[in-house]
Amino acid sequence: MIYKHSETGMPTIHLTSFVAAPAEVVFDLSRHVGLHKISMQSYKEEAVSGTRMGLIEKDDTITWKARHLLKNRLLKVKITDMQIPQSFTVEQAKGDFKVMKHEHHFKPCDNGTIMIDLFYFESPYGFIGQWFSALYLGKYLKRLLEKRHDTIKEYAEGGKWKNLLGRI
Image (tube, rainbow, N blue to C red; front, side, top):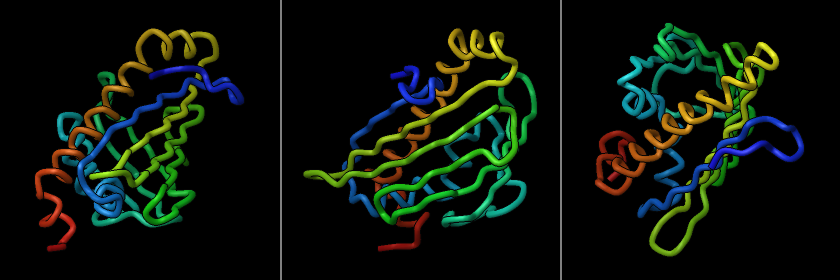
């Protein structure tokens, strides 16, 4: 679902998925740099500075390089909050957005985990940026988040997480 946040007025993407795996596994897969890269391989996304492998932690920074919307882009983010294994928040430190904040939440439930993403963003360029966000960018970003959810679900439910996270 894409909507305008009632307090900030920013476009907001709310995505919820059920994953048949423990919250701890889903949480760690969601903060694994290598799995992020796997999920975004069609955009040639890679970590070029900061935390470049393994699990991100609170106060870590990562600069991602990727090809989005016909252009190579850099996005530097910082992990501003982390409550293991319930949630973590990623915020843009430098990049193309005017504002970008991505909250990841994990709720244990019967037979698995409810994974919730709240992605707040604001485009630059005033009215033109708002128009572009409403017309195209929101849907584009929602597809990226859905791809991430699908990849996390595949790894968590299929057992691939054991090799990635080094657990048995």
